[in-house]
Image (cartoon, rainbow, N blue to C red; front, side, top):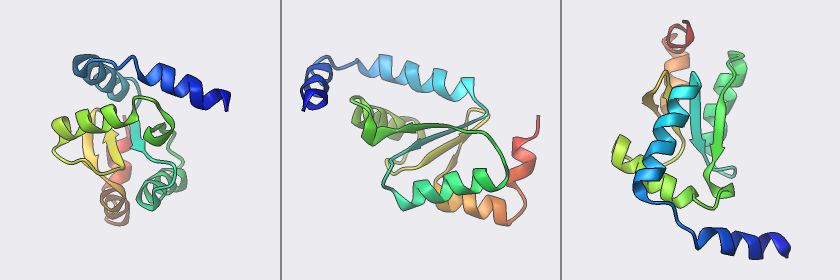
Length: 116
């Protein structure tokens, strides 16, 4: 019960869109692979499993577990042009979602993107 009340309190202090966009830019520049995900999403699980198979460490932001998750998702849409999750970034570039990552892996194009 305590976590629900603190969640409401924290969410009343909304970050500005500019703050959220700065957070996203910083997040995708700090790690080779960043996944904006939702914990219950099967496509998100698909993307994370591909990186697990190739033994690539990833930074995951579970948007459904964050107070600012919906704001992050809205700002991602303005950056990438799509609102769905997962949104996967490799070396700061959006490569798409779960099906896209799976297709990159199946075609042999994913691993070369992870080198360097």
